[in-house]
Image (cartoon, rainbow, N blue to C red; front, top):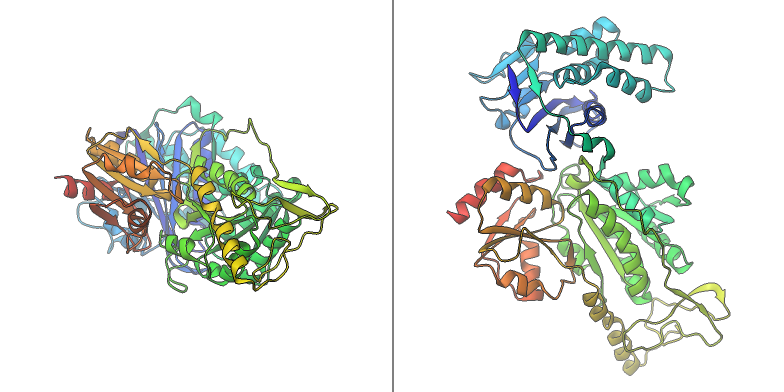
Length: 570
């Protein structure tokens, strides 16, 4: 079977502990090295072993950055794997696996090619090499040079025992030979045109893009307690901390983590607290402390389905209200929500400068889908990597909370200058001393809230694509951006467009004007309550005419959005 498409959807499925993610990471690097555009995302259970996990890859001759439902090629590495993704299997799906294991799972009319990954691996020395065999086979099917595969093995297993290196090399060669036989026999031959531009691009996960953005923003401290899907940022900065001068503190709990980050800012550093929903629930007291101290603070909040533990390894956009209304009392904050890898880098970088300039807490709101997704993109723009600190050298008589028209007081750092830098969690006067003067209390509340105007002036405008003057506009925020873009391309309607909010609060002043031009406003988001639609009504007086909501723990797919839009716009 010879196939020629612009992109090809490959899914690998097997139990936790079998190395499905290892195959994903290998194929992403190998196929990118061969000049293909690559996109990879995964769904996995919250267990170390057992259950079924799958990873989905799109391999393209053109850029691909969104998940699809269709499966062109399914590699089933263990019984139960076909059933696990049965809803995505169609008449065009080709399944690779050991026929004897899957006889009861294969739907009628679906083609299966008999490949025993486990038997091939066992003959080499260990059935655990099944994943390496699968990598070799797919390399051959996609016409990757064998030298690229061997080079990957040498780099991937560098530092391991020589026996491990040699056996993995044999496994990838055995898989490659099996793949060649499939190609030569005409059973499976995938033809894609490599794109030379890919070789100069980068490929990474969303959480890595957040990490690089933090480094570019001058981050030199992270306080965190491990909690999926935010843990990747902690491990990323720990890995690169020594090189970039980042102090990494795995705190005893989230309460300690956020207070450590606040202490870092008080001392003149740039700190980030990273967590997920339940962890941020513990951080809210420290979050309010940032509001009272008028301290800069960056919080990475990686969303997952709740409430409580919920689905700890799945995705959702249901913590917008949590970020918007968290904390006791009234004080300003900003919420940024990147939609792709480039925005994950730029917005995280921007968050540090915005927090520093405005002396407020700033959220970088991601989710499991964005955190765990790979694809290739242009290198980040590093032409103007400068960290502009906004603290001052203090003089005698310095007032940390001096009343100003803008609400911004000069921020001093202890030991930098002759002034005394006093802060207090109680209501305080301009110096920072506790006060219960009720008239002064009113003035301090107004001072803190005065920064809201400054934040609105600094707000980032939404992305309008392809132009704002469309009869029907899909409104979305955060990680849904590339998925909606591709869905609209597939839909092919000239009268439909997209407005994506990368800053969800405070809203840009142009919000109402942009959305008012459309007759139909469709808000798409990954939660059950339409949280952003409510925000638009409350803060921009914009009425949403239709909602597309998803809250089962899975990301949207291109086909799913196309179907929903056709229903609405018919």
